[in-house]
Length: 256
Image 1 (cartoon, rainbow, N blue to C red):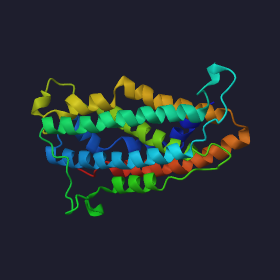
Image 2 (cartoon, helix red, strand yellow):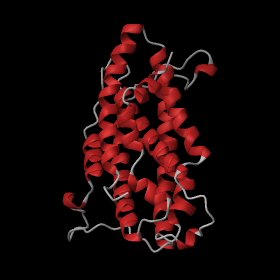
Image 3 (cartoon, rainbow, N blue to C red):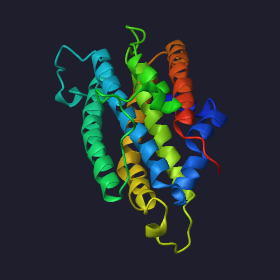
Image 4 (cartoon, rainbow, N blue to C red):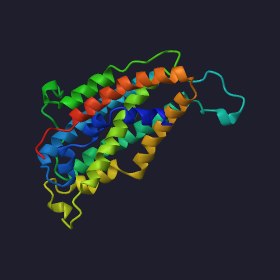
């Protein structure tokens, strides 16, 4: 029997494929994207992180942590909400490192991370790719679900969905890397994707981190009655579909 998160992924195989495979990813992995094209996408990805951080704050506000200390110390922080709190705190720390990695790597390879901005330093909506606009709406509109039944579920599904798709997208891109002896320094981006970004976004640590969140969600859903499990799945699928649509739109349309 599949788990809750497995059921999400299996619910729309075609949609998941569109969200995790694209000509943009293939060309990035093959080193044929210019620094300008890659930089514009990275600039959007950096702004995506800003929305992600706002969503993390919302998710934390949905958690209902135990108000009574358990008798057995082994049960301390063992409830799903406490585990999700710990995961989110680690996630925020990772994001801080990620943002520094973005800037340092782009600077080293001469890639501009800035989109056109107004006199106040704000990027107009018109300069953002469709996927970023969809993610910002998704993140900023995040609300708790059923107060009596895992109110944090929708938020957790959004975080799992975007991390899962991002991981699988760059795993697929990694499989598209040219196996010849072509020097990454000769790539149009100077080797930034093949040397730096793919390794970072497909690392064993990232794989384990995504699985950790899946395990937290799956364990929480598994403890519910069958009727409740079905209701939770339907709630999760609403957000899953939104994630797939945003992820698909997040990859720029370019020629294969």
